[in-house]
Length: 322
Image (cartoon, rainbow, N blue to C red; front, top):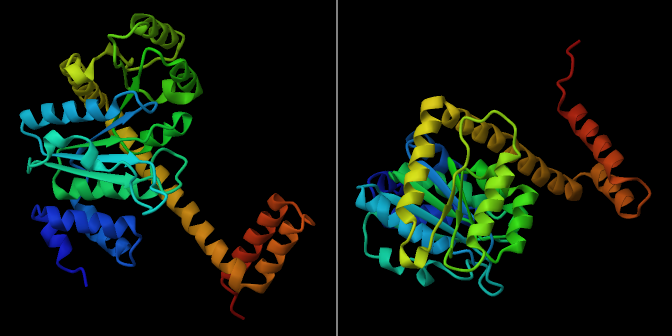
């Protein structure tokens, strides 16, 4: 039914790309086949993640960076992750409310995706949408997360460079950093730096970085910006590109991408196993009975899960021939 979409997407069709992303997002029965066909055409795009608390100015920074990449001749793909609409189930804010200056540019594809209950800052289908933008021929893919604090750590398993955006009045931002953002940031940027407290925040971040005694081939720079005024954007772009070069030259990029594929492999196994277990809990008598014991609190979930795994493994073990 969708046989023409793959060649059309590879040929640069906006319509085909949008259609395939929708199929993946809605978990169409053709999703696996489409991803399989497009996989050989992925791997060339550089992936940039922009994360941090809500209201930090991530969208404006993404817009400004996209324009710089376009000025350098790059084809840019942008995915913005928004809260889920309680009515439509789709992205609540939507890409039409942001980055309006980029519309009409045939070298930019923008897509909003809903969180759909994801607690990791990124919906599960975002990873696949990034792959589609890669196959489509994007040189740079920018992923902007919804901004939910500690759970933003998901972004490091999707992109090559992580930019953490903070704001001066962010006492909450410092807490988010302590909760894990310090470990994933490749570049820090204090946006809205014309507000009181910007210099102090930059000093705090620098001090926190100095406490890390590990040997590192890259130490995250701490920058300032005023995205609405276009101030500090070129410096941020230069830092991103420097991280890219260092990562390529030292082999860190290859290691990061290898780890990313490894994590995706095991994550997918977990997701598929959970779906299969939920299905069997309805159709398989012994597993259904075990689940009832858990629900009635007559057995603890951990012990029950081990029993279920052993039962399922025994069923799949090939029988010895006489």
